[in-house]
Length: 157
Image (cartoon, rainbow, N blue to C red; front, side, top):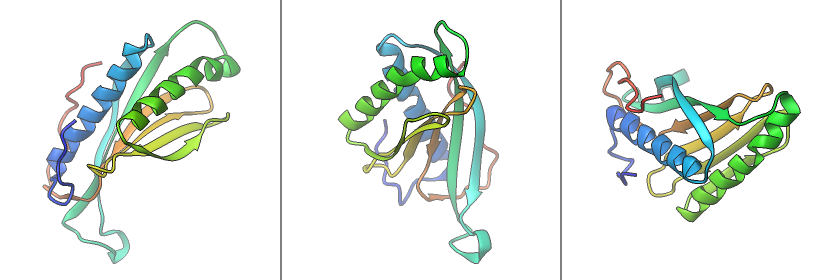
């Protein structure tokens, strides 16, 4: 992952770093033998001047990828049982890289794990919804707005 000073990161840089973080996390997941496929989802930049608070030239970039977890079994309970080791793998991998785990909710019906990289200020989340959908989401620290359309994902499904 690129270590950029988040005080000077641009909106476009933030999209690139977010994709790097997703790619690295998926690599760690597959290296442990999990079979996942990623599907690009939401990519946006939210101005930080909402309600007159903050600087209109700063944005928070967020990208989200849906993870298709491939493994046997059916049903809600089974899906939560099957993804438990996935969460343990991701948490251990983030911790070995110096990330601070800031949210750890691992009980059904909603599972969420969120960590922040203190070096870059980016936050990464692994979330599982009520029906078992998995999402890997990255949020940037404040970035300098470039007022451009979000670039396409650099990760292929």
